[in-house]
Length: 403
Image (cartoon, rainbow, N blue to C red):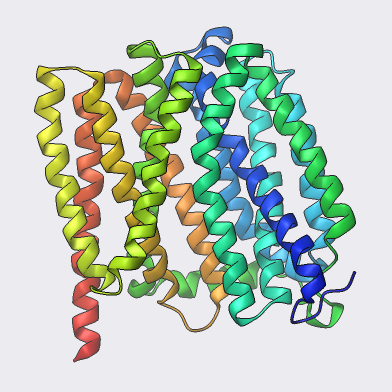
């Protein structure tokens, strides 16, 4: 099979399926085992917030890994490094089932996160290698859709597996999926970057490009806000097992079902943002919804203090996820629109920010939720207020450009 600058029609199905399988593999490493976090914490004799560090280190490593392995794949090609990453991911996923303590578990998650960053960044780069125009747009749309749909179903799947066979069975399932994906990619995913188009590997040169892009306010303001948007989602992800399973006693399956329902509103918000853009500008939409969410949090804090009821949290998370889907979509649009060249580096920086920032901020949030729910809510309010401030700075830049 040979893919040229414009992908052959007969190969597009194989190529698309490979992209989908690689994308799903990375997502499964987070959302599927969420319902099992309390059980892992209990077995390792740690509290839930400490065990949730396993999410943070995984996403941090994916974020930093993209910055390193993206330029490397430009130098040595996509296929070999992609297959290497998939092999390491499968091996480390199996090794997680052998963990005897949290330190060992976290160390393996570091390697697992770095390995999946290789496959994800090379898969995205492969699209740029072999497609143009509407075909490329279609493939990116498929990837984004998968990133929205799979997290909805994954907690439900993980919850059922955890209730039936325990948390180790979840990682055995992911390992099995990694083997299937590796086999498929090996036989159906060719090298997409010709030798003529490869460039000498220079991490210094790559980081100089990153530095120049990062200095531009039209890039870093929406990019940082995108990271904060993902932080809101991450705070939900890390807090929800403690709230619903530890505090309110939900089973893994019940939590999985609820998480899938709430996650659906994330996808709904992202879909609605595209329709709203036809009538209003992205900053206008963001300005309205940021103020709505800030007001909503202020309203919910006294409600939770007066009546610590599960329905309040469910309703709050539904609204938060709906807004998060809108923020994610609109800030991605603004960030990528800030550059006309170096789009690959822009994408890598944006991808890193959307993982590294939430990992740090969400990690703090996972400790605050066990400390005090009201403090955790005020923490979310602070994030929103920072986003409002940066949006005003961005709008000032836009007005200046018009002059």
